[in-house]
Length: 228
Image 1: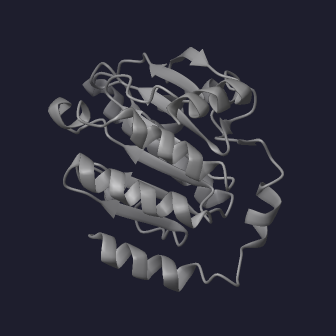
Image 2 (image 1 turned 135 degrees about the vertical axis):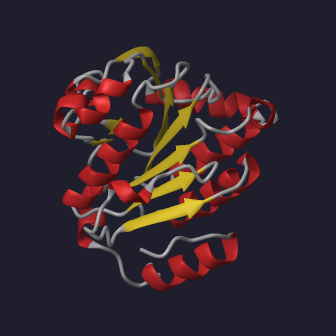
């Protein structure tokens, strides 16, 4: 797996892997589904089947050691097992690829960023492509000062881009950022050092989430109209 380190490389990689005249059959089938099932009952049960497609779901992680990295990796593995393209936009280059092991993830794009601005620019580019089933934007390690500078217009632009395809955007943040998110979840689990000795399936069963809010499609469209 060769990591993409800048926007130019990312654009070249997308041009090579997503020729405009070739589309994956699973992507065509996916367009008829309203949600992207995560395989995690803690999410799928709350959100009536999975992450809403063509929309933003935000996961807030206000406390450390809550299991956000564990959850993100579970989504990557589920996408791999279901043979779907997924991208992880790593806001502070904090993803540990050792978790993947020697098993290749051929449909996985890892975008390594050094700051929030790079992460947002990468997100904009990937959402315009439209061939990805899931884009994970991980901002949980980014400085609060950078996150405060992200305007609401950015998230409204992302939502407009999503309206044209079936991608699900999953934003992981330390505090609520996305005012127009279709759904916002909060990760409330807390893991200790003892968790390092437990099998991953057991740890996934200990993940705890709660729903902070969920909007209908019409509510999201109304927010977009208000944003102009």
